[in-house]
Image (cartoon, rainbow, N blue to C red; front, side):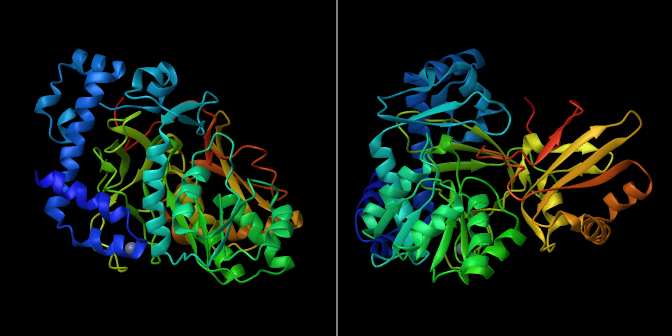
Length: 449
Ligand SMILES: [Zn+2]
């Protein structure tokens, strides 16, 4: 009864203006929200067990009686993985009729994962996105130009749905060359730009040379960004760059940054988040269960992203819990002669080296006697290789004493290779940051398979 009332309040709130919706949702007491989340979890579990052949079979095989389950952690070592989606295909997961689908390839396999949804689910998520964009300052008078990739990707559709509700001017450019975007978008006098982080970095490099225009903010989603690259973008435009955290499997929108930019505010209305196996600092693979999707619910879906749950009150005053900035993909964690390394280590090593372009990649190999770590970076003037090497070594020594000592002890070789800007990524949307060519990586803090 309480849950029905809270759900009704939530539904009504999301149908009013963004400002009113924020006020109304803020009035729902935390215990009532928590009760609603549990009720939604039980409903999702029941529907999945009844109508999805994948879940029905898995629960039967493991002797799980969903009527006794009240919290995801009670499912023990049961998880849904990206590999499940790849190997089974989407059909065994479908519960109700779908009317759209999206794909994601990730960085580990060329086989796409296909995820199905209904238009109603997109509209519902659009409402939440509109709410959040309102919090960030987007108003009907704003002019949005988006450069999200429209090919099989979910983000442009959720964004469009949100902008329809906010009623602001919107032009969809698609993911075109950043220089062409600069010329064509400028004519529409955009105040807000949407794109993928590496694309936004490239656009900003062009704007730095050719002149920025007045923006209220930039909003990026689809991959991670280093703080130094973010700062460079923000300095160029004189405007903040906010990040979204989402996956195609979740229809985007797992969380988004507020004006403080200290982690992603979680979308606890739609997802149950867990970090079941964490290190001493609380970091581990984040696992989520969808709470409101009817077409293709996912139970304890392993995101492969390393982060931690943050439940302290954020400075912005919004009370939802957060996910800390993503440290990297679990499948990019590598143990080598350097130590336990992942993308965040190299983000930090490269932080502050302003002559570098946006992309980098680390390849770890073995020469027969020790591991070799080759750091591929991009810069306009390739003659600056020596200077960059010196800066990288200085940062390594000052910021990672352990990794520096291992280098001095010749536990690994470190090489830096400079490439032209834009050459590392090629035509792919995602760049695998850390590649282990030794085929013997181990994954600390990763859930057992
Ligand atoms: Zn906040």
